[in-house]
Length: 413
View: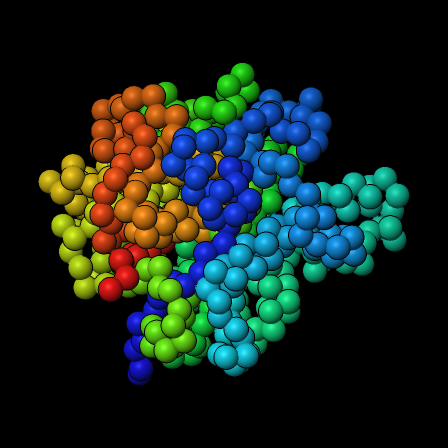
């Protein structure tokens, strides 16, 4: 079986702290946070009233009126991020061949907004009034589908749905597709728009969300001693992956190389994580083995870091168990203090951040960190961004159901 090197040549993002990669990256470096009271709907019936919405978003800036009505919010985000990634990459589908160019864009929830709206219509007006477009609007694979239609991508095309690991699995799976020679180029990442009355209520009632309605900008506090839950975010992060030889031949600027991928399951609990995040440990170990590097080669871990009491504790313990003494030399950062938790899109925007750290030699701080506890006592980069050459960065994410994913990015040679 052929084995190809795989590189990243384009990045795209729309997030609660910026509508493009430069804006997102600047927001991370300056400590901008996206937490605020929810503005898009009335929260008077909810205990939790905060989230990280995409601010000042107007679909009319990106789509005509007909397109705005046709595309679900999470699909809009995917299309915007994909467009930016393609533009930066400079790749043309005609150069690759449509059948050699695919897409894998994950989503944990998909079109929940249309589902809620049409359920309300059915209850109030009857089944005959439910939109005929409901099913294609709500299904999770439509971001991949619409991106492929818009760009004419006829290669390998799937949608990974593994809750908060969806985007990371999508990028890893796309990496393997190219590595095996089944495609020359792929668009990969995740998109999510789950900040709806039902979405917030579901997480609220399982006590997963921060209740800091009085301080929404600082409510997401990854690895802090007083963290009390995550803050839901929305947006998309997508990248262009391609064969190294093809990228070099067309003169593309290579941002980073993807060299390792690990994926495991805890087989433990539908929402909880196994002791010391054992499953995530194995995913990180698998990614390092895939890349042919050891623990001491890792400079930086872009962590899952949700700001929940259990996840942050277990992820920190897992890093210490896996890396031993080297754990104290690692920068372990969560971007969720800035953006909140984008669920299925988290690994998309966070992989963009990890790659930007490689490109620029800077690691953004973990925002809103108020101090360590006995379990979360690693170097979380808490006093502004850090200037540091980053050669190898691990990107972790984990999802309900016990799904774990780890990616390993390397500085371009």
